[in-house]
Image: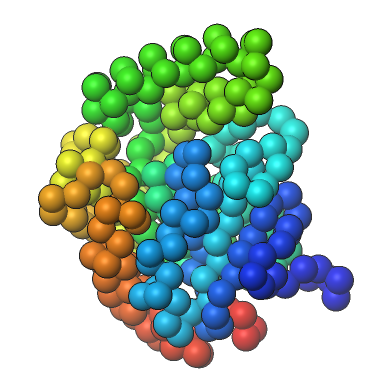
Length: 258
């Protein structure tokens, strides 16, 4: 990292192509939001997860305060964005919490840039659109058709249409690609999630050593519907010792001090 590279903007600022918000100090936990959201989706989880950690909230491209950027809007591209931001922040690797599309980005990041991910919590993630329930996918496709048609006459809707296209056409992850994920992984869903239970099982079974957790009586929007229960799952997982190393919350394991 050069001496002029941005490092841990607080409360927020641009880091390369994306808007980044940081809070606290300690081992970093990168938080990636879902489609149509920004880092504020995790606000209710900050008090519990921010104890002894530096929380790094990132607005994905075309979301929040991050620019649209060039090229196609794809989950894989958004994962490359995160890898670039981590490099600019001087973080060789970080724990990562991704929700919905953020979970999909986390999976792609662990596949495409495995050295950047120490531990991964993927919440409500899917490998491809058909991983969602038929009803959910049909509703998304119908909405996308309407928004895409209107976007021709209403330019501000073009980015909205692209975001819907992300859910209708993306991600595109082959289950066998997950065999390359080296990071300890926890896959979390709500009992009434829009991701099909059998699809979640496919994700868990495809990642070596991955574990699953289901939040009872909750749907897809776990960060806002069940923030305390989700925070507890995340905190317990991150407190476990890394294979061959110390527990994740200890100062000795803090990559910001390397």
